[in-house]
Image (cartoon, rainbow, N blue to C red; front, side):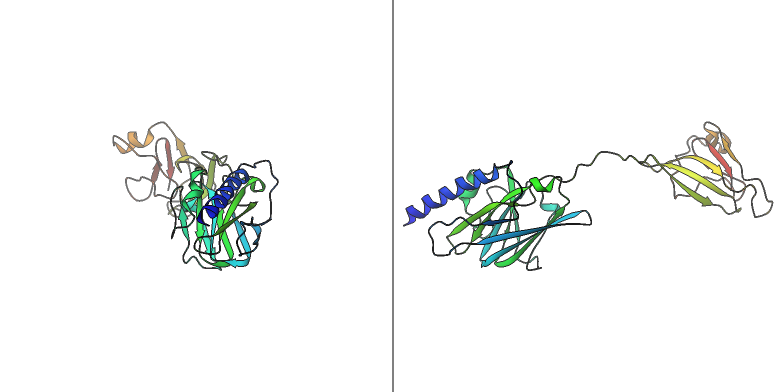
Amino acid sequence: METRKSLLFSAGVVAIVALLAATNVFAQLSCTSKTTGEAAGVFTVTVNPVNQNGRTIYTYTVVPNVNKLFVYVKQGLGTDLVALVGGSPSGISYVTPHSTSANFPPSEVWKVVHHQDGVVFPSGSIFTLDVPERFKPEEGLTTLLLGFSNTTNQHCGPILGPTTPESPTFQGSPLVSTTSRQTFANGCIYEVTAGETDNIITSMTAVTQFATVAPFEECTVTNSPNICEQELGIPFCPPGELGRPPLQSVPGGDCYYPPNIKYKC
């Protein structure tokens, strides 16, 4: 009997490999488990994928209930994944190839699949995987392993799952700069532009013509290379960051945003 079970499970593993390799199969929202001649019968799994706030939520419903569920996911996804069973994170384990949780999945599963990780759920009927939004999620096919006793399992798939990468991102940003208004103690208001990636102030323009506080000086901006070092007599003025106070030798009068901006403040 043990030999028969081993042969049947080996056949199931081969079938799993074939399912995982079927990248040209259209996304599936349901699957029926493949029986191995055991008395457990057939399981039906449906998945409901929802995009919400930059995340993709896969909710799997299994009928009838299973004692354990294993889902293949994209390798390295663990830190970004939220898994729930019946709305609770209790008893769920994230496993990498050749590892198990409470002896599940069986070691035979990892003999042929080395390029994906997995999630092991305890018993239940509704299982949720919440991950960063998928890129072309309709191409993300996975296989489920359904445990209905300590020694017997069935597989189900292909079915939609979080096996595709996240939406592509690029280094940096298409946004080059940020402009904001700053009001100073003398009442002068300026438009201040800063770099988007480093927040360093690059230019200023007066919005108001005159200060509202005595001696009511003109709100002027002077641009001159290294004006901060030259007028304050210090060897180095660090660049000015948006949101940080400017350099100033004495209260009132002149302020500086190195390396080249001087203005009335």
